[in-house]
Image (cartoon, rainbow, N blue to C red; front, side, top):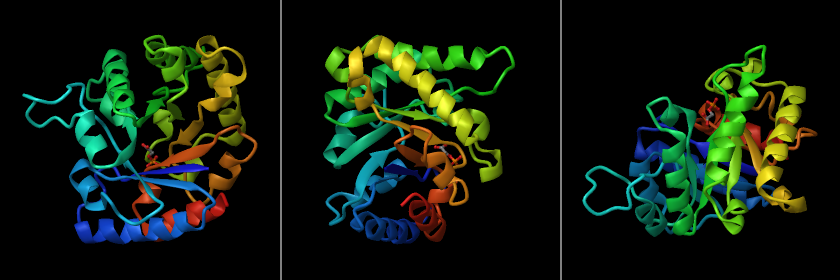
Length: 246
Ligand code: PGA
């Protein structure tokens, strides 16, 4: 599986970051999973060139291409640090005003620098008349319709229902509901990627993935990995989660 640790802004000490990364390196060396660490931007450079099977991720990227853009972190900067994966459109960014158009622009910058965008999508709430399905369709469609057929195969979809983020395993989505959403996401993808090729786009899940629910969410639901927030900020908890899906 692909397991992406989104440290958010939880880790505020270089020593703790190094210890967590060392733990992730041990997990990655078992070879069962692809482990990605997405530190906050100021810490990414700490791990450039590290002798580790852990791949580097970033939590966001700028819409700008660099140059006169004070404070922005352009895709070229991330690529120069050895970043492989970039989260785009995380709900905590969308909540600050990031639009579908900005998400699309960011995805294009990430692809242009040879990195893999992890496009985060997900509804804020589950309404009874199924408007949440429309939200998910719109979020995927706005990105996919702007990409070339080849680019459409170069990204990852992270389904993260906002109502399930930052809670506990009891509040996460249930395996049957997740399986249903993955089927729906695959159906949307097939509108943009004809034939069986849409299976090449991994769909992963995020939203209170914890050691207690990772196994049940990871088997039989069609997901190919996890985007892990709070459970990745503690070495023992993260190791337990990785073990649970092994
Ligand atoms: P969580 O966060 O695991 O803390 O719910 C997931 C995410 O927001 O990526």
